[in-house]
Image (cartoon, rainbow over all chains, first blue to last red):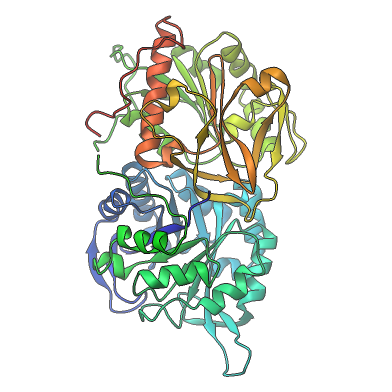
Length: 260
Length: 242
């Protein structure tokens, strides 16, 4: 049976992992390959790497870190942040990433999704959607934000999720900007709105505070995978404790391996 | 884990490690397969044309994506005939993901004719609750093979695909080594003489993935030494030091 995945997210700025709310109050947290290796040993099912500076002139640094991480942690690696072209995606894959996540550039030019999927296969293309609740009406709604949550688009997040999947996204990484960094739980309504309309796997992101939130993201939100950063970096919860809670709730998870 | 020399200088004496050619035809990430094979003691040679195969003891064909562009790129690099000759001469082969699917006669994904080493075709996963099938899933062996030595029954491996090979006929069905269920069961590992194939990614499957690759290296070493595949002496499947 396919397991629900638990994914630590490494936000990387200038070659270091940073912690804190994703886009402000950055605190140095360590060397990306080292942290990825630690999480792999602790039972992470996958690693997501987001280059939050994503400055073109620092591309070489990012590729070097991707390669060092890929050589160290023998679990899948998804890399995102600032990828705008098929060629840039190719460079990141060649450096050792298994999947590349597209965000702002895909909103600006949705054909980027189909071009990347056509070249590398849809399984290599993750579309990251940063969503924020709109209005205060009876029916919940969400809009897509870009540029690390700073750019407003007015695009309906659920419609965008469907379109991205149609264009060739193999997976969606859905972040609630309202919940991100707040430790108030995942936006399960947002997740449910998307998972009920697409057949590709959905990774829940934004708001994890404890194991019960992971259970809710899967059970109530329909997520295939759940991502978190600070609760793991700060060792508030371990991957093992999150998986134990998910297993106790009847969700299929990959057992954490005995230390070699 | 230590870093490993991938650019071994020309003229380096044979150090006894199994020389594994990994075919590079532009179909995805080679860093992890290179690193994983090196970690379990192989000497990796990246093969971009048929010539590199002459210097190798075992062949690994990795890859993700669709069959037609893959066959086209293999053809352009003059690799189709060398790979078929390799398999027909009974030398050890491991196909990973697309490298397994290409062994069948054709792919439903784009109608491409593939290598035709095994009877059957590559078909879309049936009744799958999500597609692509991405994540860790259990590999259930239908019989024993040294490839899975030291690995628990129904151990988890990492998958990322929407299609899988479906063997046909007596020889095709006899090649089935393991199945996995996503919606319906599909074939996740095959074994046909000196040809092995896995639909999952051992290079991304943590400890059990490295164990499986270590088993492949030992199996291939025995074949290369002329000892025969089925009687290869194997240890408990541990990784020593890793």
